[in-house]
Image (cartoon, rainbow over all chains, first blue to last red; front, side):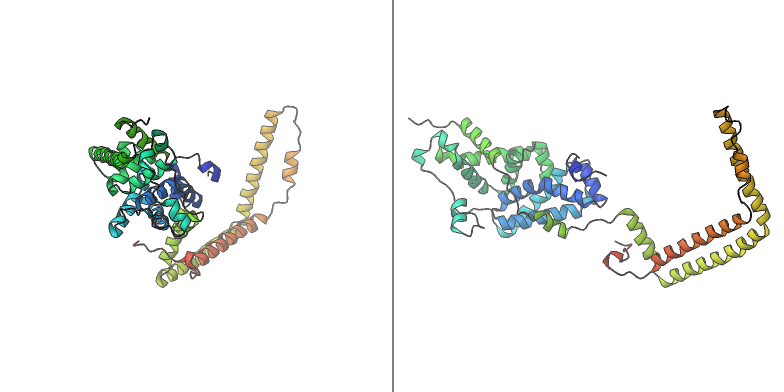
Length: 199
Length: 173
């Protein structure tokens, strides 16, 4: 029986097997491994921290309560990202949160939050390469990603933020490989178009 | 003099910026809140035990089990006690014979392993053991202990559930 520290050395499949046997530590290890990637994906999909936290919880509860239906021949990460993506897409369809306020993230309450999450658009006439690569680019990219169609957003986030292969993304999102490549290509074009004024 | 980015440079910049986006972190109590909503599966032995209890929970089955137990106890005692009484001499002989064999084996092993130990005194020691009617009491003690264990197990199996963990498992689920 592996101890808590040893669990970190096991594969996802081995952890799932222990969790199926009723080991609470194995459940917590799965949460520890995936809470940040899942929360990041959902947060960047819905752009609302409180909502993202609720949806992430829903994702983990669905996954952990359905471990018996998990098939070990598939990657656990693909399975959990698939559920996270579905949860986020469902939410976006219900609330149509696929746009981002220029005044900051929807969950921004205080003046500091609004300022921190607001679009940091710099003066176009003074935007050289070095400045584009600076801190503002992250905010610009976040903004640009938030404006993508949800399908493109999922693909581009899984590809470039989570570092998933095209095949894994296709498996995760239940899309043909060609469609994934097309979505990512179009997403890049849209991101480029969004950044066009700043180069 | 400001240089305009090429498409390729912009692509690289976008890809790099995406890869640098930080992983967001949920609130510290996130894991606990998830675990509060997760149903941990019970251990397999516990599942089997609950199923057995669920099966035995019906009054007719419980009565049948209790009756079977009482009958088996009566039959066993009715057979074993007279048999032990009638064969106590034979049992004593068999017990003594067994002890004798074990002593002989030990003696032979000792002789073969250590030729110098030709006179260990084991036989005398074994022969001097007080083996008489004790064999009967040992057999009766074993039977009584076994039945007491069964009675306790049956009581645990048939007792009324007291908390949520004791609730019988729904077979249809």
